Each structure stands twice: as C-alpha cells, then as structure tokens.
Amino acid sequence: MNRLALPLFVLVMAILPQLVSDYQVYLMTLTVIWAIMALSMGLVLGYVGQINLGQIAFVAIAAYTSTLLRLNFELSFWLAAPVALAVVVAVAAIVGLITLRLRGPFFILVMLAFAEIVRLVIANWQEVTNGPLGLRGIAPPEPIFGISFASKTAFYYLALVVLVVSLAALLRLVRSKTGRMLVAVREDEILAEFVGIPVMRQKVIGLCISAFVAGLGGLLLGPFLTILAPSQFTLFASVDMIVMVVVGGVGTLAGPIIGAVFLTYIPEMLSFANHFRPILMGVVLIVVTLFAPRGILGLLRSLKRTPATEARDGR
Image 1 (cartoon, one colour):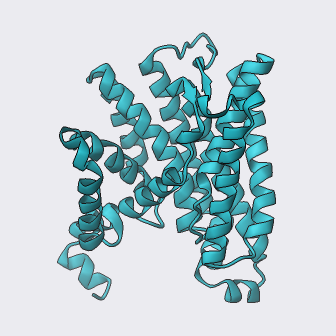
Image 2 (cartoon, rainbow, N blue to C red):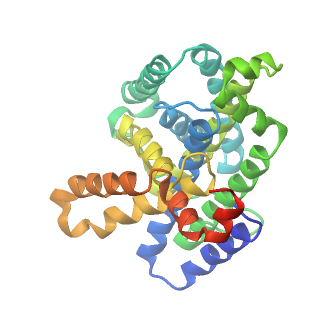
C-alpha cells in the first residue's frame, strides 16, 4: 500500500455517504464491519500463517461481553468496549498457548471446536445470553464529545474511523520488527528459531493482535444490527472471512478490504436470483481463484506492471 492510497481511500469513503441513499449507507457500514473482521483474518492467515476457523469466536466474545455489560450493568459503550477487548485478548492468549503448538489440520480442527464451544455456550446459557433468541434492542453508542451515533450515517463514520485506525496500526505493525519476525516464522519456523526468534511467543502475539481487531468488529455488530444471536457466529462466518482474504489477496492489508467489498456487494447484485445465489457465488469465486490466484489485488498489480518494470525486475 503506497503512501497516497490510505488518504485517498479515507477521502472517498468519507464523501460517499453524502451521495448515496440510506440503504447504500447501510451496505457500506456492513462492508466496513466485515472489512475490520477480514483484516483480523488477513493478519492471522497472511502473516502468522495459520488458517483459523475459530476467528468468529473472538468476534462473538467481544460482541456479547460488551452488550451484556451495557444491558446488565448499564455501562456505556465506551466503558464496556475496553473490558470486552481485554477479555478477548486474554482468551486469545490462553487459546493460542494451547493450540499454536499444533500444526496444519490439527490447529484448524481445534480452533473449529473452540468456535463451536463458544457458540454453544452462547446458545445454551439462557439465563445470561437469552439463548437462541439472542439479545435485542441494542442501542447505538452513547454520544461522546457532543457527537451522536444514532443516525445510520453517524454510525458509518464511527465504523470507518475504527477501520482506518485498525488499518494504519496493522500497516505499522507489519513494517515493524515484530511484523518481520511474524513473516519469518510463517516462512520457516525451524530457521526462525535457529536465528533466535521466539517462535511460540510471536505466534501468540500475532493471534492476540488478530483477536483484538476481530473484537473491534464484534463491538460494532450489536449496535449496528440491534440484535445478537448465536446463529450469527457459525463456521460460515469464519469461512466468509477467509474467502474475503483469499479473494482480495493473502499477505496484504488492502486485500481483505477489497475482498469485503466484493463479498458484500456481489450477493446484493445477485439478489434477483435468490434461489441460485449460493451457486452463482460459488461460480464467481471459482472464476476469481482460477484467473486471479493471488487475489484481486494481485491481478490489479500484474495489470499495472509494464514491460519496463518487468525488465527491471528481471522477468
């Protein structure tokens, strides 16, 4: 991502709500929240090198913790949010210490089981979570510094600020020493350990940061949808996040955002054929995978390359 891309992205995203309908603002907010969650998956998939089918559990923990604190203890959104994020990071650290020693399919299966356990706890702990009926009537965040988030547009801007801050922080992270060590661990754990990199610690740090970002998405889900239910946090949500990262471009930070736009708006464009939408989505994904194996971002970069740049790079 070059230096102009982020400011240009923010400018376009800030102007768009003034030009479109309320429904489009709703779709844009949904896209931004998915982009935050996809960013978290992008970090764990592209930089930690793990396929995490349990990522949605971190979203659920943050969403439910924050909402329960607001409903039961009358905490404001702004006080409940840091508590919920601290819980998510603590859970991620414990889960990471247990599971990140596992490799390949074993890690995938254990994280899948973790997500299912979290979902079942939410679905069956009726006294606290209201079970399958979920938590309803979730209010928007309380006004802060005189700014109200009651309107769709105001909430969109709040979600956009969270996305931009997350993106900027992750951009700084992947360019830092920690980010380079994460990539080294992803590429070759044995070699990384040989040169003195604490492999296990780096992987746990990566998972905790990823869970923190996923938790940010979870914090926004309740006030945006005004309802939380176990059916929102199934395996398919984690798979959707993975697909967004793969379609956008693995190992990049812009890729998950592009994938979130793609996976949010394509189903809307296919709404005229609701019964066939899953099939059409599958066809679209197969086409993208066949013709853009490095994702949409990789395809755009290859189209941008000129004969001069290829000659300079020795291709």
